[in-house]
Length: 230
Image 1 (cartoon, one colour):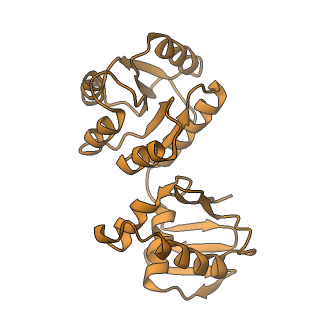
Image 2 (cartoon, rainbow, N blue to C red):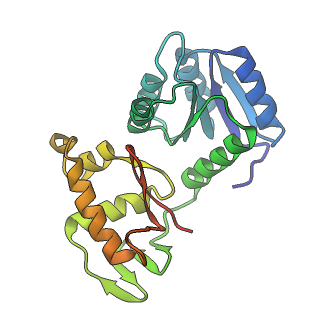
């Protein structure tokens, strides 16, 4: 997606200097920018302004940024890019589990921020979900629940297909271990990460040209998995 003067981005950050830097960076690429200096104001601006995307700091003075994401996800599908000094694995997992679309650590490079923002806007603003998704020589026919590799149908178990379909639906985006377990095995299975390793090993054996060096079914160490289409 190419940014235009109609693409509106909400910045929620309590640091004036960061907001100013983000505004300059985004406006130089023709985005419209609105700002909020705390979580409550950010939620208000999100409801009133209906932004196309949100750049959110976690360390806000009134609400933790993760709580802001949770409240947003009650009613908004606007993509959220977290921009935070918190670099720990647990903080990243918590934000992604709450509904963030991506996570970038401060200090940040402007070009990387713009690239990540373009990516989440492309994913969430596509007009419709394509019925058939392709990666490498694999195609996933979602209406038919059929997977083919090189034109030949690949037999997947129910859990394997559910795992793959979840990655297809959120392709390009990391899905945390907890999210996958909750979606496929239910809330009581959130600590059973060995389920994921077993199913992912089978998927790679069936769908990757080099299962030990996967090109498409990728691991984000300690966080989760993602599907790369290229």
